[in-house]
Length: 173
Length: 173
Image 1 (cartoon, each protein chain N blue to C red):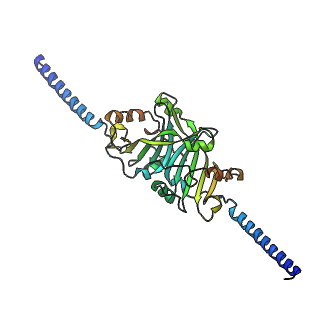
Image 2 (image 1 turned 120 degrees about the horizontal axis):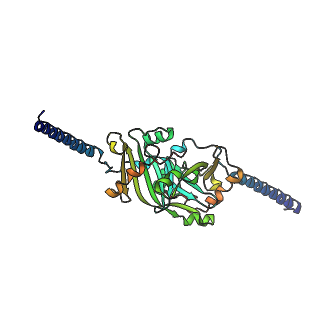
Image 3 (image 1 turned 180 degrees about the horizontal axis):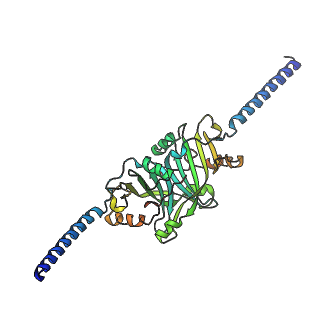
């Protein structure tokens, strides 16, 4: 092969490889960009109870975790990873003292949910949410409005530290 | 009327009144003797969530209150008094620190349900449980066995101090 022809082939090959790399990179970016929930899953307040939680620190919150039928069955059966179609709702409330209960008990010892603070969701769809462990995350404020991008970006890195398929909650029997 | 005859009538009347009082008292005791639940209502763990609670003092407990369909609808609609057929379940657990969550948060701030401690029920039947405000109370230990009489006797006097038809719990939206 003549040097000029060899160079031309090499340049063409390089250009093709670069083009493929750019395309692949573009696709990868598209696929790995986190996709967040934009709508509250309907009927979630009627779902079954998975467990409850209480956070202090800066949160002072109660949580009740509810699951749709797919998620609830997986929690109860101990199925891991959670199957596609699983949806977990975390209902958050303030953690406030109950004056009425404390009077009856005679001691300041009783805490109940205050006003709702936010509702968060995890939806399992291993293809749609492949970039975030198969889970789509959602954060909705107390008025139902969508959380900010800054809020939504915190979901996955934190849940990535959970030991059971990105989920912290255990089933409370 | 001769004094002796008046005395005899008075004595007979008194005896009759006493007999009536004794009978009435006997009946009243029979009707007002508290009737407690002896069996766990089936399927309660699948009921919908009414609310959650956290008790400190000597309890250090989490509670999740679930309601059957009749109770849940009444809570959601704010119906008082609760209709016959309402059943409220209070699932109690220890209130324990979550080592896994605390590691992720980097602070000792996260509390989750420990092992179940007991499950309590209130069943509304205004005739059967007329002596205790229309509510039948039940207390079942973590192994499913029935609570002691001493435990069961504490339910009604305490719930009698609640301001909404013997119920402390409010619906958490």
